[in-house]
Image (cartoon, rainbow, N blue to C red; front, side):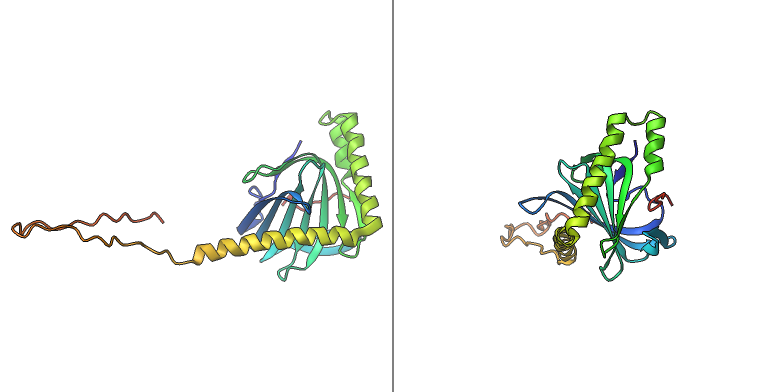
Length: 226
């Protein structure tokens, strides 16, 4: 089964990136939230979602990664350079590993792609069938993937705006963390000086105090295949 790290560490399309991660445990969300900011990409990525062609990866675009704890799905929200959601990508997973600094998913092939207006489609059914035929997954896991996907699609049909609100809560949470990291990075360091003057021997002209300061060391979905 394919393992996907949410920081996109293996994605060669990204030349320069920033990554922020936070673990949340409250009544609104429990799990890991990650935010990948693509400072520079080799080339834009254009995909087809519900019959629309959309650029989902480009310079200064962001991918919000949401891994709910004890759930069998994860969410990637593709945002443009102004922070507008372009697509909501629901991965059906065998498992979410919510380990801070090493968060990842064990992918179960099947995916649900959703546009901001709530239109959606089920994709990668061929990949799921191939995984079953080649013995990578069991019949039980095959059927579980469809059950989870259909549960998500029922939720999307019933009240997608509420799902969007919860997703945007996660986005604002990680943005606060990213802002705090940048602030601490640019904050000037304050060096404390020793206020006690070293004793000097009056009769010894060659004795000089030495400094003890130490210096610090400074369809088929192809969203991630290229």
